[in-house]
Image (tube, rainbow, N blue to C red; front, side):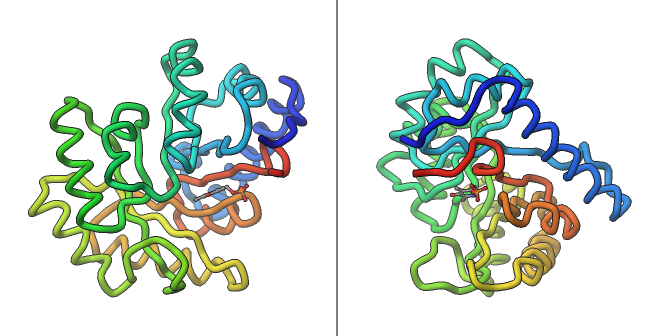
Amino acid sequence: MSESVANTSETAARLAEIRARIDAAAKGQSRDSRAVTLIAVSKTFEADAIRPAIEAGQRHFGENRVQEAKAKWPELKAAEPGIILHLIGPLQSNKAKEAVALFDAIHSIDREKIARAIAAEMKAQGRHLQLFVQVNTGEEPQKAGVMPREAVAFVKMCREQLGLEIAGLMCIPPVDEEPAVHFAFLAKLAKEAGVLGLSMGMSDDFETAVEFGATHVRVGSAIFGGRA
Ligand SMILES: *Cc1c(COP(=O)(O)O)cnc(C)c1O
């Protein structure tokens, strides 16, 4: 677990600063910044580091592992029922049941097996999660996500064969490339696929993502500090 730099006023100040930067980036494009959801990515941080963000009014949080989230979020969610929890990391189908029970949104749908497992679990548990299809815009072999050329057909399959409502697309650009190119590409694919959501942008590039239409930015270290 990472060392917490957080106390309530420090965390509140960081959140306010990021929110202000999102607002400015949105305004520059004549976008309504209320259309941009800030997801505070709390992976590796313990509940004590997360509580100040909740106290500062932050409600959307992101985690990348089901097991880690299960260890800290049920208690935090019980204390603040307005929390909306996003799974932003890869999901194995044998964790679908736990993921559907705990999370409110999943950003990493990238194969039929997972999509099927999520669909079955949502039905079984009577829960409706917001779902994003992850696209490997850089076609990196080590990275999760459907290939860009398959993205539109994959969204269609999710809708038509599995009855899933897909809220949008998600990407993580390659570290050594200009993120703007990937954000523009993801926006184009989303348009083709007929989805409105764009989950893109992290601590180093969330303003650029907002300029290219992000509806969800996933910001970790700029809020909680560096991870171990
Ligand atoms: C960790 C992570 C983030 C946040 O990264 P920062 O650079 O700390 O803002 C965003 N998205 C995903 C998928 C992540 O795993």
